[in-house]
Length: 161
Image 1 (cartoon, rainbow, N blue to C red):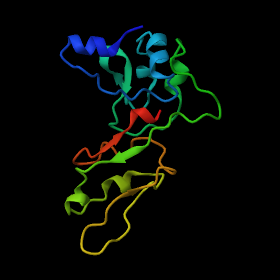
Image 2 (image 1 turned 90 degrees about the vertical axis):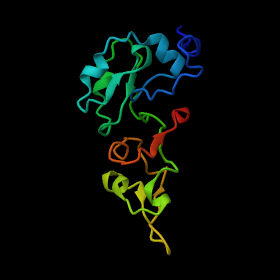
Image 3 (image 1 turned 45 degrees about the vertical axis):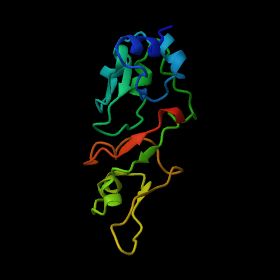
């Protein structure tokens, strides 16, 4: 098993960045053990959001949304991505950070406009720009809101997986 923290230490990075794995990925340690880094999942992704991450392992880069088509899981021969019918692809949910423009008093609703699930709403407020409210029960974690955000205020908590 590859110890990412140890490898990061020798590269001058004491803590490796949290990677967002493709949908239906095994738990991180099992994923690292099973993944052969063959790039089949990357090539199968019609959205082009599966990229080679740290160590050549697949990770997501939200330049578009994940449609949860499961092409990546079907292409995975090693079993690192394994879709069980009826199981959600992951527990990831968007988080809106302090860099969000409405929190700085600037009108912006682009994340809400790109959210097909309508998980991000902007209830009116007196005395300033409407602030985004994210409903985690509605959010699918598709990432449609990430790329259009002009200040990169939207992230995912990989620990929620």
